[in-house]
Length: 380
Ligand code: GLA
Image (cartoon, rainbow, N blue to C red; front, side, top):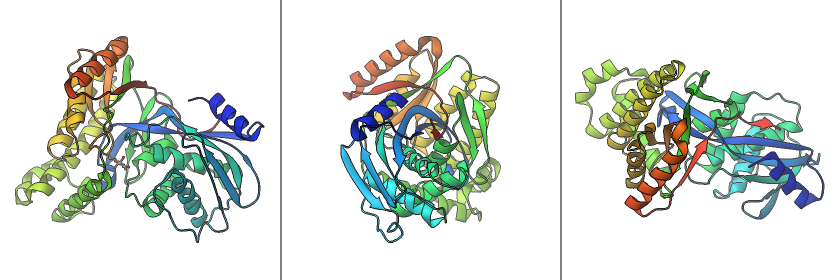
């Protein structure tokens, strides 16, 4: 997806050039899975697949938006946004929900019209919804008198998703879409929202491996995991599992029921792995980083129980390749994508051989693609 395509889509619709184009990226999480809502650590990177809005300010109170990908146009009035009720989970709800969260925070909003388009696959676990939210926030910011504070915007977009769309996600996806940096992943402390950009090791490519499987009921399984983590936090008498270290866990885990014990073991070990992974990246140690990814997958599969047959097959097919430093499922799980770290000299053959092995083994037709780490939400 390019700026040119966004400009062309606007021209096609309005017979004119847009006044502005904004872009917000999807993300792939390298490590730190199901830790954000436990106040822990994550290390996602924003990718070169993004949502674009090309638009112009209209000044009034109307927002009119045409989704190129869905072939639909919709509009809503900013005067009514406080009174509007959410209506399901279609693409427009992410637009309206973001307008609602911005307005509710006291920020003044002015109308605009434009086209929305992108190339973040929907439902694959690459955060297309966070990308839409951040792009919309950027679009409103264009005509406004308030300043762009990336972390505050991420929190408002999370609020749109939690309270408007009704998905109980953590803060990771919105933070990385807002704060990503070219060539870097973001080590984020999800409690303080302090982040450090960590460079990707030289000579390593990040490959996204889409299993082409999607599973329904992810939301209810996700909420169930969150509740189990809360039970475990309660057992340790802490506000969030972030506050339990590996030693405390080892000493007291035997008194905890098996399911919350497994969930807690994943979260506590994953937090430690994520900090170690950032260290390995700072050292440029792709091998150590890859091993941590492999361990993360096992923990998500065996203790957190959010992998799937397809994800396990994809991860194993990737790990079997000599050029692969490590691989794991990424995102909420149950289907969607895995991520692999690959020796950049052999990325093309890695992609071909892994896709072939996976499709022979499962009969699914996967999509594998190289991803570059890009800037977070921006005006182009
Ligand atoms: C989804 C949520 C994130 C995070 C991941 C799991 O992507 O939106 O907040 O919890 O799952 O790490």
